[in-house]
Every structure is written in C-alpha cells, then in structure tokens.
Image (cartoon, rainbow, N blue to C red):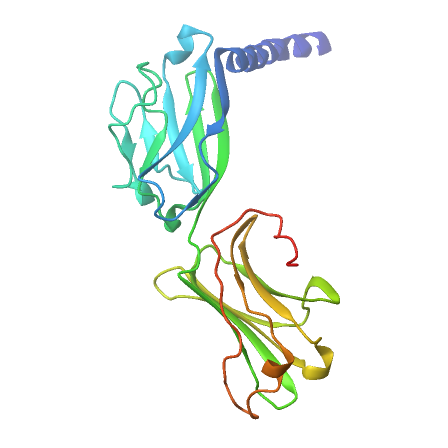
Length: 280
C-alpha cells in the first residue's frame, strides 16, 4: 500500500518541475528601464520599459502585459497582443498610446510612455508579464519631485540677548526634511540640534510647506557666524539657502520683540549629495 501511494504523487511532482523549467527558459525579463528621479514639469515624456525576450516562440501565445501602481490590486495598464493597450485609473489620459518601444508585434506596447509626468504619479510601478506557461514581475520606484517654489532664510532679534534664525520653504514634494548648519572661523560647519521644525501639507494640492527655527544667545556665537539652511527630499538634495555672515553689529540690532531682518538670502541651483564644502 505504501508503494502505491508514493507512485501516485509522482506525476504531480514531474508536472511541477516541467512548469518551472518552462517558465525560466521560455520568457526572460530584465529590470525595468527608465529614470528613478525626475523634476516636476521637466520632461514632456517619461518612458518606463519592462524589457523581456522570448527564448521559445511558443511562449508568445497568451502574452499579457500589465502594469500596477503602488501595489494596488487592479492594473493601470494592460496589453494583450494583437489588441490595443488599455489604460485605467490614475494613468488614464496620461499615456502616449502611439508610442512603440519596439517594432516587434509582441513587444511594441510593453512600455509606459507617461506624458508630462507630475508629482501625483510618484510611486512604485510593477510590471507583470505572463504567458500560458510562465509569469514574471519587476518593480521600480519613481520619484517626481517638486523643488521649493520659494525659500527664505532670515535672522532677527526677538530679545536683546538672542538671535533667531528662521528658514521657510514652500511648494515642495515629496515630504522634505530641513536642517540648519552653523559655521564660523573657529567652528566647522555642523548641524544645529534642537531646532524647531514644522511641516504641513497644502490641502488639495499635495505639496508641503516646511519651516525650521532656532534661537541662540549672543554669548554662544562667535564674532562672525554663517548659517545655512539645507532642504532635502528622500535620497536627493534639491536646494539649499545660505545667509550672509552674521556679524557682531547685526547681533546688537533690534529691540526685544523686534523682527528686523539682519541676514541676506542666496538660493543656488539644486546640487547632488554630498553637502558642499566649507566656505573659506
């Protein structure tokens, strides 16, 4: 009886092995090609290409290409050759359906050609390729960021013996971080700990406004001080604002409760990590 039961399982095991081997060698899918980070409004068209090749002509039968957004259960794009591709959800009206990544009848509509990509299309894209005998999944994170529409760095005297430094930025996406650096002839540039940060999303627009403020006693400052405000988004430094040197004469300005501006503003173009070198 034991012998008969063992042989009964054998066909199922052989069938499973046959399916795995066919799926591995019949359809080969490489990683999704395309940019990982782009600036909002900087491109007229963005292409995400899920490249695949057939090593077995039989695998072309039953080909289905689907794209998903943010791991939601329903696709935003589907193509079943020889039919035209279908667009659903957030990508409806946002794709160039005339775009062909290849002349091959079984590959030409595999890619997403996003027209005028904007911040709401940031997220993880999943490419799902299937045939009658195999399937394959690839994922790619796309960040479409918006740099600050405005950014200011100011100094003022809230009290006679203190100086307040405030940095504000608006219209940023995705959720940013912000820090203030301090440097002087005797102190290397370092992040000021304990500064108060506030971050709010703009209702209905999805952008963020952010601010950071610190207050320092005059006796804790050197004769000449440089404050620099640096704003970042995840993995990417996109802008910084740098004030003019704060001199002893500036520290003595203003009365308690006053709001006199004693610092300038400089907003250079976005630069990549790491942070810029110290000023000399």
